[in-house]
Length: 215
Image 1 (tube, rainbow, N blue to C red):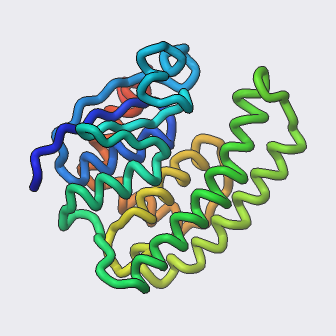
Image 2: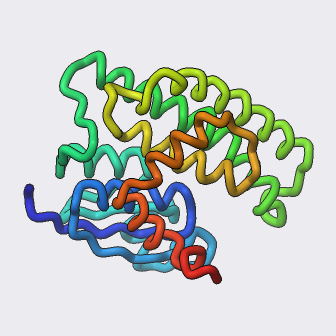
């Protein structure tokens, strides 16, 4: 494997977990800067010179700078491949992975779980709305049911191997569990199986240090 010179910024959110988990799966020796999304650390001059979006997560690998959790994870997987993570080798497998990643990010992350966060936990910023939170919860539950039906007959979303789509789905299940969103029993079993992966355990300790210590 190529010698990695990777730095990852971000801590404490499902989105910041994703690149940390991917790096752990790939065995990358990375540097971690644990800055939070609303601590003021993303608004420093130094950070804005790296990432004008003022968001986490963010990654730098030499001269390469990438934001957005999906883009970071795909870059790391493709740049530092490992047998631990599915690397699609044909058009159909790549398309199916893209399909699931887009679906999970669009319908579960952005459209439902983050809306719950925006109008619940972050209501002081964006406005509290019980109506928006409840509608988003129902929308999330609908789409978890859809994913759950697929996973009744298989262990992973794509090609019978753990991959990028599974990483994204599990991070959303973590998020859903924190918000007490109802999900099918088989998705709880799927989550429990993947949560046994040593890389996931390590990444959780890095991303949620206070939670792991029980603080």
